[in-house]
Structure formats: C-alpha cells, structure tokens
Length: 238
Image 1 (cartoon, rainbow, N blue to C red):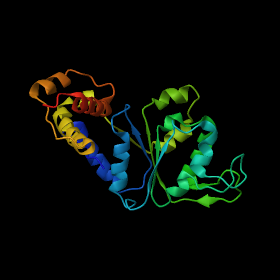
Image 2 (cartoon, rainbow, N blue to C red):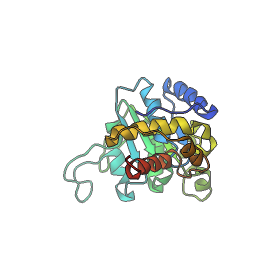
Image 3 (spheres, helix red, strand yellow):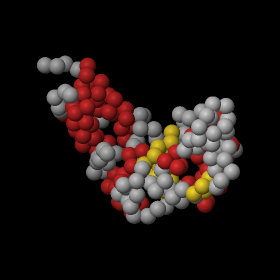
Image 4 (cartoon, rainbow, N blue to C red):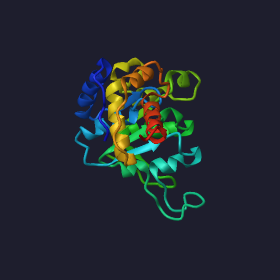
C-alpha cells in the first residue's frame, strides 16, 4: 500500500487516529473530498489491525446499478431472478473475517439502506431469494465525499443508517489545506510513476514546485498524481 505521505499537522493527527482505529473493531465513516485518499485511510486501518491477514473487500456504491446492488452485496440463490442460474456469494460473504469497505456510501440506493442497517446491527443477512439467515464476521468501514446531512434533510439517506455508520467519523483534509506536504507528496508520486511507467526518476525544480503551490487542486492528491504523470509522459526527454 501507499504510505500516508506528509508531515503537516493534519497528516500527523490522521496517522495517530489510524493507529488507534486499527486496534479496535468500530465502524468508521471516512469523510473528505474526492481524491483525498479516503480508501487509503481505510486500507491502512485494516492493515494495522487484527484482520489484516483476512480480505479487504471494496464495494463501490456508485458503480453498481441499483437493481443489482442487493445481489452484489449479499449474494443470491439459484433462480432468485432472471439469469441467476447458480448461487453466488456476495461481497459481505467474501469479506468474512476481514473488512468490508463501502466506498461512496452516500450513493447507496434508498431501498437497500434498511437492509444494510439491519446487517450493521446484528451482522446477519439473507441472500436474494434465500430463506436462511447467514452470519458474517465483518468490520465495516465506509467513505463519502457527499455532505450526508444534506442527503438526510432531502430524504435520500436514512438518519439511523448515518448514525450507525459514523460511530467514529474521520476527516481527511484536502490538499489545499496542507500545501506544506506538496514537496514530499510530489517526490513520493514521482517515484511511484517511475516504477510504474518504467521511466527514469525525475525531480521537480524549485520553480515547478513554486508554480504547483499556486494551484488549489480541486481534485486533491489524485489530481496532483495525474498532473505529474502527464508531465513525465509528455515532457521533454532530454
């Protein structure tokens, strides 16, 4: 996994929070803007805990069509719906003993939210089309870039589910609020890019860093990485 790079006060504080969260099994809601590294935080919590040798299973709540979400999360039995020719385990079952990470949980379909709430309460579920209750020993971590308070006010997200997910809320600061980390981040990302692209490692000049420091980075660390990759691939070779 990547490191949580930086020495700003917010990053140092976040490292301390991750260390403490790794030692417990509490449900955690990681909040922050797109591109800040919310999944990285969840992976580091998992890696530092007793479940580290067990699966870390990611569910991208934005990428799964609403009509398939329940089956994707809880699995289904044969004949549960058209095309269900064989039983299939869901992500919850795959994560048994480990960690289930619900990325962008604010995009979860409203009709599935009560079923997720029930699972969070007693860690039991049923496959779609199934009659048997199943148990799963799973730690749940979730993340969102959305202001869930607004979604609750609009009736799009259940308040009881919000409070169950946010047993311990964690905030990941945007890059513009920790620009003192920019040189360390750039160095780390350029090393990653050199390995991934098979290119010689390059360094940023003082002028380049100064120019980067004037940008607000609405896409956060992900935007910085994309910008550096573009520079490495398209920049002068000599």
